[in-house]
Image (cartoon, rainbow, N blue to C red; front, side, top):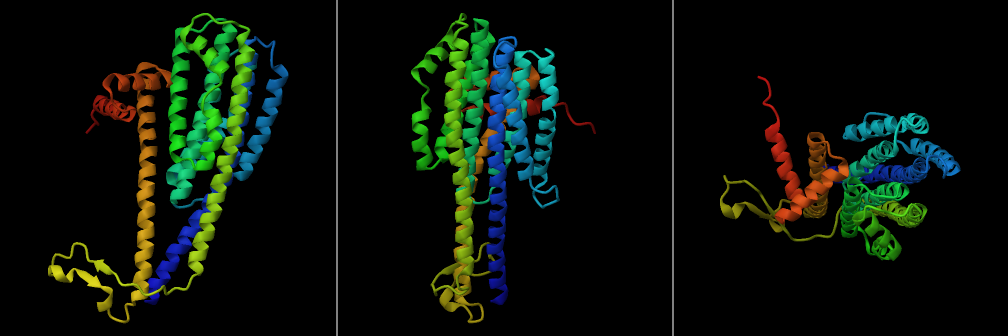
Length: 409
């Protein structure tokens, strides 16, 4: 009985330790959110500077560069110590990749100023840095072990991803309006970016709480003017160059509003972490012996016993085993099972996203697609076959596996 209680207490203490680590992860994600937003602002200013051949946003671009540098400092201060910890290998590897991507920013800026990267190449480089940072948020959502916190993380990650796609739409639209025309590739990219945003925000809506959804509703639909400019970008070859700053201003205002909701989602995450810790500490402080309850335990796989003996009832237990301890065991097991069921559902959503990303990567490698073109290919195939994008992605990966050369013996 004493050993059982000790392990129950160890289980509760483990829960609390995991939750306390999630608080630190939440603080890191808050710093990540700010850094990504500042990078999105620098990308936007740099895009207008390039499209105008240096006539516009020169001062804004320099100001945004300084804001990114300050955000990088806050991000590095929020990083956990570079020490070995069980289960942290992938997260540490992603942190290393993020730091490496950030270290490449000065070189990117120098190449951009020297004219060694055009608009598309510069934007793609910024996109890659931001994608590397978003991978950290995805990893946190994928490994969270508490359902409420995992739900908040998935909602936050999905919203951040949708906001990033809105930033890429702003850049693509600005380039088209500045040139006075949209190429076929740009029109297709605009369509793909709008569709991908809808998917990200749909996932966000699935996992967000009522308060976040209420804050999202006024932003969910773009304004009439944005929709009008979108139609020009997606359907017409010609565009008014004067629409560049109008488009940029409208999309920037929308993205800034999204950042306010993103901050709310980050605060919600931190609140849920603290509430979960308080609940776990309160449970751990309760008396070890709970009220007596009658229940049965089923001995799974005990085929050597007669059927009537595979179920033990609490009334027939020996005194030294203790019905109260078994009651605690049962309650703890039921709680953990509920958490496992909820986490399994949420991780299925994340697994779908991972499979789709792997299929996109294969299409990009095999056919030279950009990321949005690969997404559009999956989406079009899904619509033509009346299937989910996830199903098409699985089929693509199956083909990819068959196309692999056999391993050498």
